[in-house]
Length: 259
Image 1: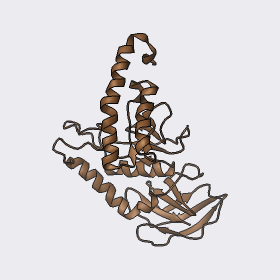
Image 2: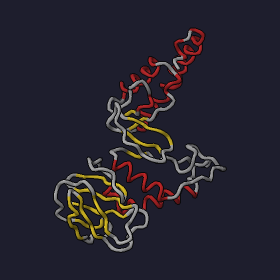
Image 3: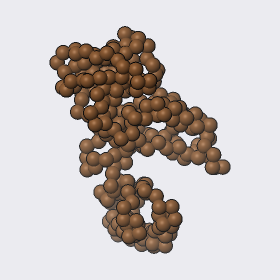
Image 4: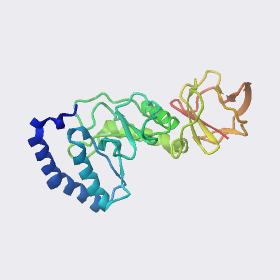
């Protein structure tokens, strides 16, 4: 709704402008000048009219012209798109911004909530990472610190689990982008240069992974974790069979590299 165009809200808008000038902008400039962040992440932009968001952005750009701003500053002023909160899936994002991010949190709360015990398993976030990489986006992982500044044990367990997987398989996430391949039955695919990373989240019983829709020949393939080569054979019509071990090396997401 365009509530701020209603004359009865004129006093509210004037108070909002004063608050922005006297409090919001000075606090923002203090953060920018003291800590020199690379990104400022805004939210709830629809609560003020366009010109007030422009005031904030102009003040910040004058002292930090290269700082990156997310789309939730509103009105198309951002540099990249922040999609929905708490995504259970990652959808391809093809709107104004080519650069986008999904914003999951470990449970259902963005701040710490002592009674919120709905934490998702590590496997959920590892697959969400694979989906994000496959579809050319970024995943902004959110946790809410406790009141004493510590991270809740449940969050530590989740972040540690993600970190252990990334220590081995980060190459398949960092710096990768989307591919033109169709959806795959085994899981997800990310790309970096002439390498494809097959994120096998559904390991076949016989260890034979079928990659569909690749029109170029494969020169070699190997397991990312231990560099062990795997055998590749044509399955006809742009499909390829990759023979891995019978049992999944990683029960959550085994990454096979295709060159």
